[in-house]
Each structure stands twice: as structure tokens, then as C-alpha cells.
Length: 127
Image: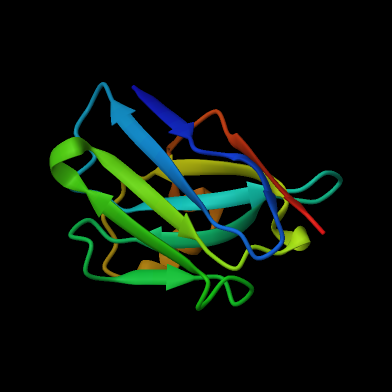
């Protein structure tokens, strides 16, 4: 089982990036997936989550209106479109997949809701 995150990089403030997370080794289409991030010296924090069907999403207040999570179940891939990036968005971004079925999407706003994690991709936003 593997989650491979990609798409990070260095962008100026106001720029955009699209992160991808490709899952392999099992089918993740029946489960929620999410993105978290961790800045140096800080704890890992929730960014966004999407339910198994893709018709329900949840976001951290700090990214609402700027980030969009989506998924392509046929490709076993989840995306995070990040627009209007700010220097405070600088962090390592991790994708995660759950194997727990819970009808409440807010269950997936905590790391404990996930069982598999990708290796992380660095996002750096310059001021």
C-alpha cells in the first residue's frame, strides 16, 4: 500500500499549485481521503478532506475559498488545488487515506481518522 504525493514546489505569494496523491496497492475509492500539512516547529494540521464519493468536502478555515480538494476514483488519485497562496501556507503537505467508514466527514479532520500516509511534498511560498 502506497500513497505518492507530488506537485509541491516554490511559488511566489498569490501563486497556485496543484498537488496530486496517487494511491496504489489497494482500492481507496470506498474511503475518505485527506490532506494535512506540517510547518517547521509546528504540529501536523488538517487542510482538507473528501468523502468516498467526492460529493462532500471539508476544509480548514485558513484555506477555505482558496483550496479545493477533489478525487478521481478511477485513477485512485486525490488532488489539492491551491490558489492565492500565502507565505503561511509553507509546509510539507501529506495526503492520507482512511479505511474507516464514517458518515460524518468531520471525523476525517483529525489524523486519527487515517491509516495510510504519503511521504509528503514540500510547498514553499515566498513573500
